[in-house]
Image (cartoon, rainbow, N blue to C red; front, side, top):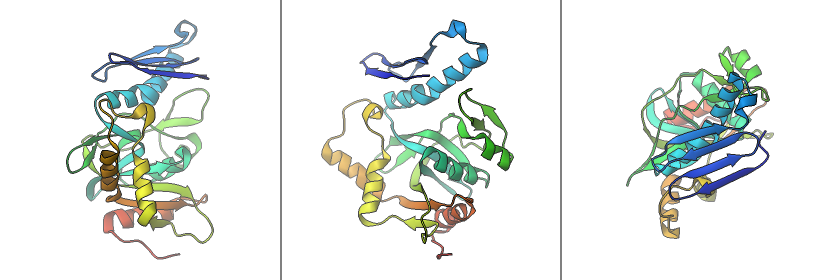
Length: 261
């Protein structure tokens, strides 16, 4: 498995090299070329799985960045009854429980893990992606979801969930954390917490959009626009997500927050 990562953003081709796994090359228009290390020693299934890992893990994110999009990390979904996209963020395992739980209730996944944002004067528009939705095999089996293995060294599977294929305006984000005693399933973010959450939405570093970097004033203006979205935090109970899913739907679709239970 990969133990070292090198990323070079040249003018013509960006290249990421992942020791023990392979490399990706991304052209100026976002074109992606994947090379798997030691392919001659691998069977076709292993080659396919490693190619997918490289493409979805780094090729696609860098491709969106080269096409001028900024990105956030999470799962973007569209709910029945509201066209705007909600991004579910948090630890990979916890956020997946909430995102897949919403998908079993009829929500459709617009983008998974890397969520591309294309900006206009008024709004950030989430672009649809084809990245597979990954979920723990045992939880997928409990929910009756079909799952396809992604690699031999993980219990994660790609699950079949409803997908949304048209760009939608970013309407808000919800952060998933584990519940502490006495906390409600959902809390609205206000004041400094709201601005801090907004300022963390857009990824930086290697995933900064191609082109001229934002000035400090431009970055502040962007974060203030993001702070105007619907932003919340949910507290996930290890025993089950149903109350959190109920709270999200009530807040997102009805605009209300339930009382403490």
